[in-house]
Length: 306
Image (tube, rainbow, N blue to C red):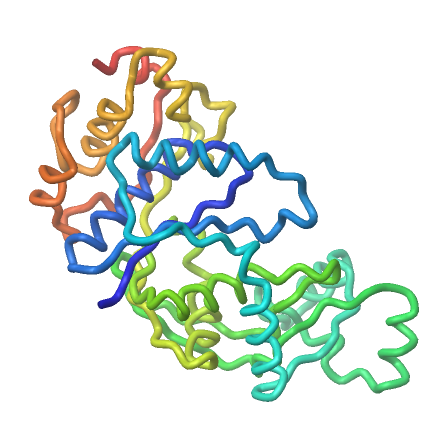
């Protein structure tokens, strides 16, 4: 049996955009008879101080709106050996190399004429042993995979066919931390995730992740990149936009069940203010009928929600 998943980073409490995506990921998985998993993407704990209570609140908020999961919650910080093993395998085929470029150097290179948009230009790809030693004496390198600039196509539930180049993306950063694009694929393959539902801001990362999935012996998942929740200015929702977390809404008298109803109404699965259960939503769920545009959040709604 395949699986879908929701994988938050424990940097802050989940906001309405996160909760809406989690609800959709749960609905997609349950609708298609898949398991539903939750994974905490806490790879940055070695670099950035994280409050363990944040992850606990995230899991509690998911339960409060009715999003349950199958099995134990996986934490990336406990899977460093798996990522190291994947790097070893990729170092053999298709190969890897150290990269000494700074962010500024990369930005200047990719903005040059004829450079593929956003793709790493391969500056360090062909350095000699002497050149690598010289640069290595000045700074620690990141590790990049040799993507070969192949073009990969994936099919998304909403966006349709998406084509993108696979550049020499980072597997391990120069501080020793494994990169998101590596860890997310390693974990998806290990957990049998064959359905990925997430915000459409991550759509462009799908071709390289699909390529890496196949390189690591996995099956490319079915992708569904869903529209984000935005504020009145069209920017992605953030705490500055008012009561956007469950805790803030609860303080206004809007509990988990009411937030579920609010999210359901935004997806066309309930009338405004209608109490609904997860069973109700699953019975009404039709991916083809979901909104294709961002949901614009108005903080005033929080004050009027029953």
